[in-house]
Length: 526
Image (cartoon, rainbow, N blue to C red):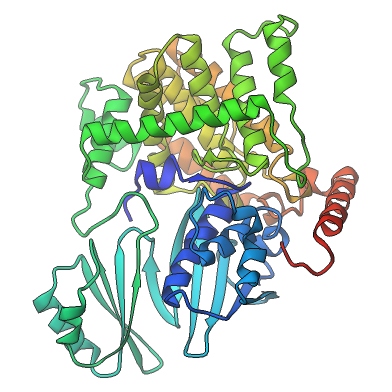
């Protein structure tokens, strides 16, 4: 799948503490719901004992997202925190089990859904930033990203005959025949579903299911991108010095079949969502099940009164970053940019600096587009998932993207934007992920602030002509290699770092008791 700025980097618009857990799980749940034609009575969810999810599924949003998806809700639905109970209230029986399945990916979801008429299984992985891939369906090895219309046909005759008949009657991006244990499944990927009248003409089809796309930008067999690495982008630019944001627009226009106006308008709308969330956070948020309460309001008061140390625009950045983190922890609307855990560093830095400079929302959107292209280079060759790469994959990516965005706000040239991105990621290689009490708040708040401050520093260094020495592509590859050397315990599993200090353990127990008291024993709200 070709990376898209809006699919993979800036987005989704969502609620929840973690995009890897909540947004991705919701997309998996939406596909599972359609696999059952919205009719099921039992759901079995299995997590591998050696993955990240047995320890984090209930507190980092996997349950909330998965069951919200099974309800058919979207990622920004205000009802999401209550989705587990809402699903039970429909009469669906839910079981969550830990198994020794040997799943190689730490964020693997195994679902078995049952109704009186049928049973289906689905195995999917969350790959970071809300992205996911279905890798197994009813025992058939598949690869579904939710970026096209999927028509699934269970075949009782000869699968090849069905494929041939479809090929003569319907224009598709791909018509795939899957075989397992003597069974056959035909998968049709296209920009629309195969019409009923065509399917009625083809013998041998035993059952049909249709899965809608869950991503905002669709893919096709003709999907192309002008470049996939920073080095390729620089070759493509051929020394013309095209601003990074313009190259981002070129990339997304070609990737998604959009016009320049559509690309910019999409990002302006994201800017407006973010500004509303920042204002909400400063005004004050409440939520029982979190570690930190409302703190940024006091920061705002003292900053306006001149009672903080003079940090210039950095103080406004800190205010906006902490505001967005508080909105996230209160289940308010955020944008995963590039993830929910690192949702505040990039937009907080860009919007605060742009306001300090007197720039408008379109300038903010251009800066976010520039950051999105840096994110494309990261996602193409690596990941945003802390479970795979540690917090260097989340906070490090956010800092790198934000540094390039800030240079863009200053009208810095292409080479300086790339230099800033390289320097910012260099200084965050090796950063671990260790959320306290399984809530993505501590030390995540400080890491988002650090990422934003790092971005500002590196942007100014780049504007002053500092030499990054190591090219951005090599820095990304280095972070990827470092991730393989990091113990699993410090990659977002609640088994290492600050998460296992005595204070953190006591806090987790206190929050668990508070939740049980509030919900009632056995309510299963997750």
